[in-house]
Image (cartoon, rainbow, N blue to C red):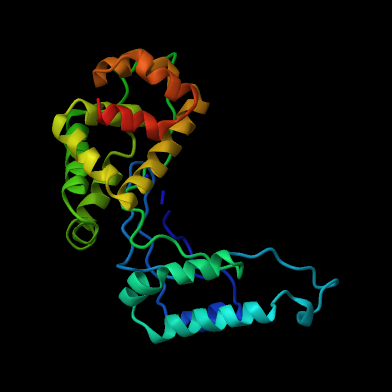
Length: 265
């Protein structure tokens, strides 16, 4: 649903990452395929150093590697702030400043804190000519699990999800990874309580952005395989909306505004 999980905290054995590694512990990765839940360690991933484009050793000496006096000042500030403050102080007091240092260009990325509450990666597309919308896999047990997933996420804050429901939601994610994203959406839209939970999720940037990142990828993947448009009529009926209210969104692959429109209908 966007905002994304971090696979590797440090990817290079650079002097910067070596210094940071003594300050910040590497967070765990708890991501699964399908409709999955990714709940990182609390306030983890304050700093991430992604791979940089390697310079050509034969053309550039070590002294010629880019690192201006301004960059030295920024790196000094970055390491000092991280080393001298706790995680919550970094999160609530220095996040904006550190992100600005990143954006100014020292190849450091600061992801959103406590992000990736829910992510739905692309599912394996089914063949439209062989499977109708009604035949797409979604058992009564799957419906119960989707209901539980959306209810828990919509009714609880990020820290409660992290500390109380992490294990349960991860298990649900593994068990419903086979469900087509349109089928999942139809389950949500047919249930007034789940629509209300979706509105709550929409009001929370971190929940919504990561939910949409996952759902959007799933829908885009299936759309490319021709596994969205053939289901449009039955999907609209299942959701209690008209085809005309969806067609423009689907033609433009504007999944976010499609869902916003549906939960407010």
